[in-house]
Length: 428
Image (tube, rainbow, N blue to C red):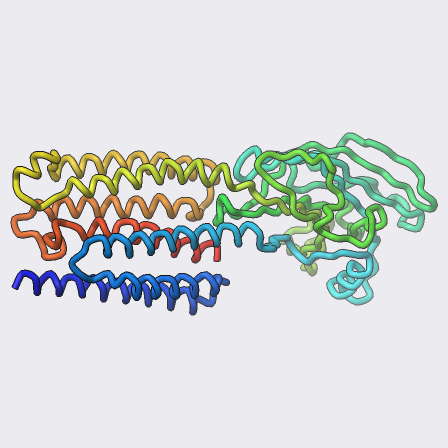
């Protein structure tokens, strides 16, 4: 009779595993909001099926259960590595506004966005960056040059200058050079200032950021639009060649990927005191964008190594939770209070690591790296509940089965399966 009950427990575990795997696969295949790698999902399903057919896990030998648990855990770990590599190499552009690559594209864009018959003065503007440094999660310090080309045909009395509205020093005061170039005057300014910008750290530490420089002309009411000075760069413009970037570009923990000019339209609810207020259509504003990718190996492994070490300790604690005889409990030193105290100490350590991630990003939502902490919270909680159930007067069948073997078998599949699911959901 006892063997028959154990057999029912084994088939119940099998059914639960099959239902969980089916739900996970359906979620991955039919989630339309994410571009999940279908090859990865298919490979995991096929490999899992082959392992189940070859090992035939449900029987009297415990090693078959352990082999299936280890195989599924390895599949999940390999799946995360594949997703990390794919996320790092994919071409993900996060540029603000409409990107333009030539003077022809600029003219076509302005013709479509400006009101018909509206004549505006166009001032070619160029940017050359020397260095950036992320001083805080939403503050970046940038140094470089910005120049403008003023043709003699422009309206008389037009102010010479450029405004960087999102910078600490919005009006670069240091004129670097000024000279005549045919029928135009070229003026360049050097700037070194901090920009406060909103960055998206959802995929941290596999995130990419767009460091942009937004530019205005000082004469707000003169109908002036800044356009890229493509003639000052090698043509044609190719973002991957990173025009406008110093070859010895200096940055820490970031790798430059591309540069581009773009236009974005903004609707202001004021006329900045220039006459009586009237509704005006949004006006195109010029941006210079630098796309950078984080060098993720440092932040990723400096977090995963201690978290992995804690996960191993929690897993080892499961082997002292036994519902065997009293002599064995005394020998292993098992008490439910001791296991719960250990779980609380592990939660505090994980909380410190998670708080360090929050301080590094200051993100309003949850970033990718935090999900590993959530996975540890989950298994620590389950381990503590398991310790209480083991010491219950009448433990449930799942706990009595093979002296609390089920929690040990499910530990790594649960932890790594949760990690893979959040990885696919966040990075896929």
